[in-house]
Image (cartoon, rainbow, N blue to C red):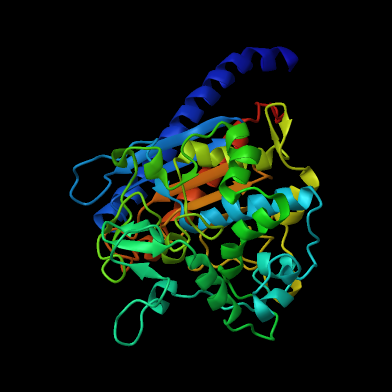
Length: 426
């Protein structure tokens, strides 16, 4: 029997290699089919699909074009607006580091650290990060800047640039230098529900830059650069990318027909984040797929990056664990999690994604997801809101969870192939 096993092993080894090659080709064909059909259905003009397992890139491929005019093909290193993925690779990362350093307690009221926010200040960090605080979902700041007669309110926006109105929202629209105080006032006056249940809200994330400054005397964007982005060696993970990169490397997001009234290209799509001069904990970060994966790989590696410890394993475990599952809330602290009961229509991720997995979606169609059990990272970057946010085929076709499930199916197939002829795992 031992002799037969030795005779069969070389043949079996080459069979495994051939089967794996066939498997990855089948995976590519499956993803290609889903993406190309989605592009034909105007789900998005193009995208980048990235998959890594362990320290290796399993799959990276670009599809389609920046826009439907087909003038510029998408490249794998192109930069996309991450939208609400910023909540985890921006705002939540900062909160994790502050927590690691003992700067706050999760069950402290946020009003102990950020002033002038009224009843919003009575909710705790744990509640706001898990979307359990009853905060109002969002505020259309751009609508609040005008009077009934159509004129802009004082210290909001102007058609002329000067020392006070110094941040260009567009080529002809300029934001007042202290508009953030208006944002805080609107948050302070917003509704807070007495019922403590899951209610997704981005309001707290607008306050994180001020919180970081209050606790560290450091600008929020510098805090992220110093503690995460520079140690990780990322280049494209940044706010306001036009300050560093050519517009040709940045994928356009939307043709705005109700606020900025121009194509959004290289400036943050989120209307609240642009009123924060492009820098918030809610939205504003741009990145290519590989740089974004570096953050999630660090999280899967228990906070380590090369020889550095950027976060403690205990903090990562805490923030990526559901906080209120008994109240029907799947969320971790900042991080999204799989649905408590899988729904193929409502889910953004695969049925096979483990309950330990975590990540976040973005309104522009983006998704970043890590699964510690599978040691797997899946990133999907796109601009599904181009030319308009009314285009929703990405969701109707279940593009992201379908691709995600293909990946798990492929990994399961490979795991099966790693059995030798007598059943021992290689």
